[in-house]
Length: 241
Length: 137
Image (cartoon, rainbow over all chains, first blue to last red; front, side):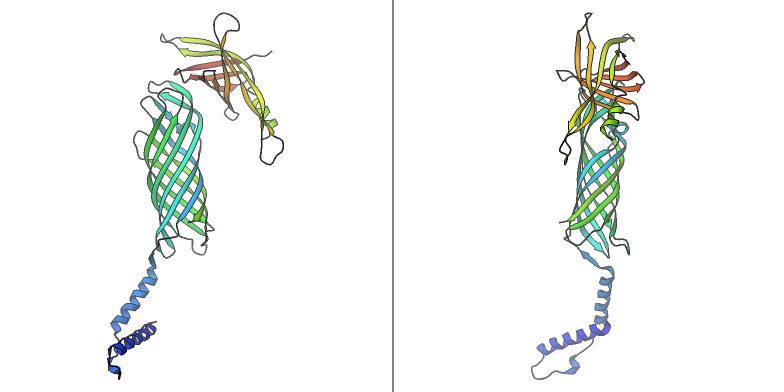
């Protein structure tokens, strides 16, 4: 390799000097091998090949997925009522749309910037407790719209490159709207939250198909009055934009 | 689950019941309201893609009567808008609605011929206990 660089350098130096020098003759003593420079070029190339750091500006991924959110705690409180959805809810089916932009790649590893939005709706009977302690039942319509952004690291498993595990996390804001017949129950809530996710992409290809995706997400609200935390099981499909 | 086994499952709660809705009074006692509840199984046709004939699906339907006045036949009627029976928990939830779209919601535990649990009128923001007994003819 060193020899190749030396030859290339010699050739380029020769051409440069031929143009600069007189047209009649070429003095061989003008050729100088700058060994430090060749060494420097070699080191730079070797370093770049080793790190393989290249900013990426394309290859965006969009994924749509279906999730089952299983709350551990999910209590909404307003000045009149407390509704413990965690006790009554079971699992909440959710549809989700995610946009992933690779911003950096290192060897086979990608650093992704994520933006996601989801929606869920459920109408069911829930136990409602008034501030005076009276227990009611009401047929409540619950809308849930979380939106978030975050980051993730994704890399294929050596020798099983069709499997790409991903770990990530982020923060967001969720809008929850409850509607019922009890006077004072209807209200919207804005609740900040954070999440951590671990997922796996399978059978991703270089063309439009970005692979099948499955994973789990832990969601935790960050507001004191409204408590919400729980797991969601996510299954989806990814596409290259 | 096929229609026949679903029908058998629902037949556990189908029937005519009489009972009371109780509401706590200010003096510590209870106000009683006599009630009749009728729960029936009804087959509704449901179209499934690819099938020519619709499939009959059994659901629970019926009515609730708040018996008022001293005369026979005076009542406030509510139709059963939504009924869900959970055979694992022996839990029956009824959402009943009158012509003014006011609701009475019953959340009842099923035990042989008895139903017991709670009732709520969301519009009036009142609730209390409910007890019913099946009437055998």
